[in-house]
Amino acid sequence: MTTATAGGLVLAAGEGRRFGTPKALVEVAGERLVDRAVRLLADGGCTPIVVVEGAVGLEVSGHPAGVPIHLVYNPDWQSGMGSSLRAGLDAVREYEVDAVVVALVDQPWLGPEAVRRLRAARVGGAFVAAATYGGARGNPVLLGREVWADVAALAEGDQGARAFMIRHPELVTAVPCDNTGRPDDVDYPEDLDVTKP
Image (cartoon, rainbow, N blue to C red; front, side):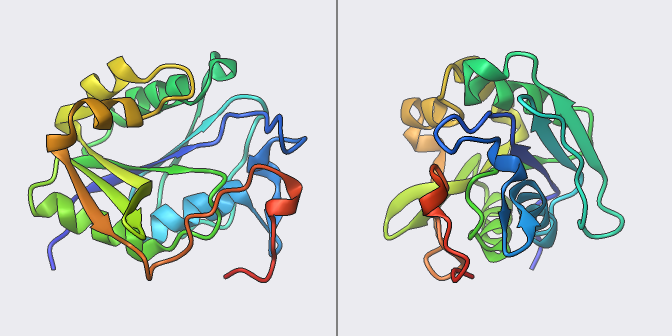
């Protein structure tokens, strides 16, 4: 099956105020969340991968050989996810990719099959493809290159691509990903459960 040439984008700039420490550095099953997010995108076929850092400087390890990783600092990280998405989209523009798959650093139980399904949806003509779980829209999300400028223009505060998707539902393709992983996010230490896959 032909799939889209897609880069990956990990939003990992937050300070983890509710968690008590930057979530990018938190470990699940011995692996930091930032490394898990990069591996998710790489295993799903995304290359290169841009990681947006902010509250803390990051290094990425354990990713597949041959997948370029580009760290980008968001000086406005305190303003929320929107500024990180804008910084990441600015960085990924430099690469010859048709789309980008965006993942949040605090969703460690997503699976790479979801990423592959989003890329396949792009080949099928999707401008934006969003993973759904139980019919509810979640992450990751694929953004076609032609919508990046409009997505960035609407990304403010803690609104990432959601603002664009709400304004342009006709451009969003829902991609069922129920059996690919769990969309749970990590906001507090008690949200961690090492028995999850």
